Image (spheres, rainbow, N blue to C red):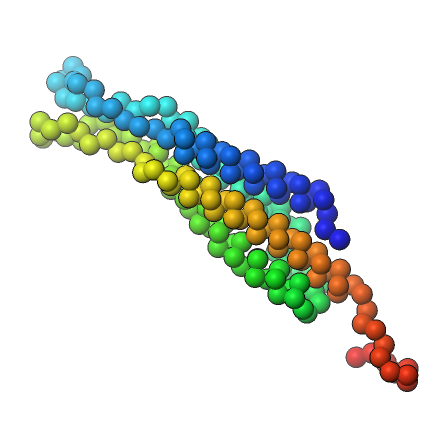
Length: 184
């Protein structure tokens, strides 16, 4: 039987990671070119840098949720064996796809946080053109949020299928036939 506590903890952590990733997308920094400083050069002025903190927080919450789910399922490879059948097959499929979506979500959140934290000040030292201010493209944190939501769904399904396969492995097979022989 699946533990409600594990399901709730993983779900809450994943939903918080999703909300923070959406918040990071909404609060991306943008840049404005300001006329000139004391040396006569134009420079970039950036808005709030809150999305970097949101992105890193989402990354850490997603990592914590994945750690809880994998600890509860013993990373699918440790512990006693599971009974062969559809529950083990579905659990293995969800396990693999969950890790793929987790890695993609973490990479999107990490890359978005790093790129959003990068600010240029003076780029056009040798020309009179205004500087090109480095900003994060739209959709990086949104992609991380989408993959975080997929990771949440697949981690929950993996845990539920794993619990079913573990419960099926605990039941001994029925004795078939009228002659009492040893089980093999």
